[in-house]
Length: 207
Image (cartoon, rainbow, N blue to C red; front, side):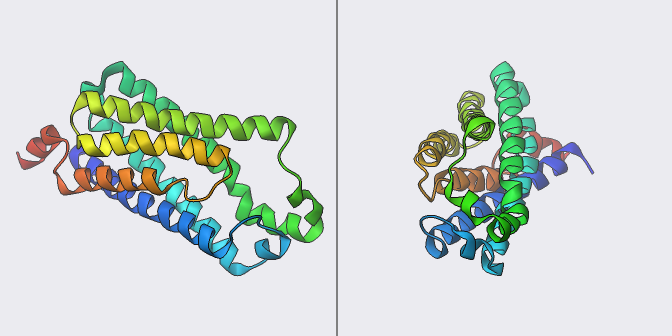
């Protein structure tokens, strides 16, 4: 498989991942508003929704590789820095959220009192750092995409706005933090998958 086809498939991964991230966020906000207590975490519906969110993060991480690769030369050093930070942020957020569907029910059953206590100490620092890197990486990637001009400029602007909103809303513990960011990923992913973005790669694939 050629590199151009791999990048196209990574675009599809970003598109589907963005859609699943929005779906997971919206379902969480509708079905589980407010505090997610022990009874909620013991339901199969809650487990499925959390798994959906993890799958979204995996697909987006795969898509991130293609989003960077398609504009690496044009984005320059800013693009590389953005990719490294965004990739690290994705891994850290995945690690932070991985325990929700697998450890959450166990804690809810064995020590429900822990769920009412907010994160503190090293856990609080790790949580903040994870989402800071996550938001900063996507923000920088949006700026690099604007400079590169390879992907739609509107999608790059939407990515910047989505990165800022994701940080603000998660800091305030508000729902629907991923909707704008997910929409930008859907747009960028579609541009790669359909061939409307990355014209150099489209030309290469046509030869």
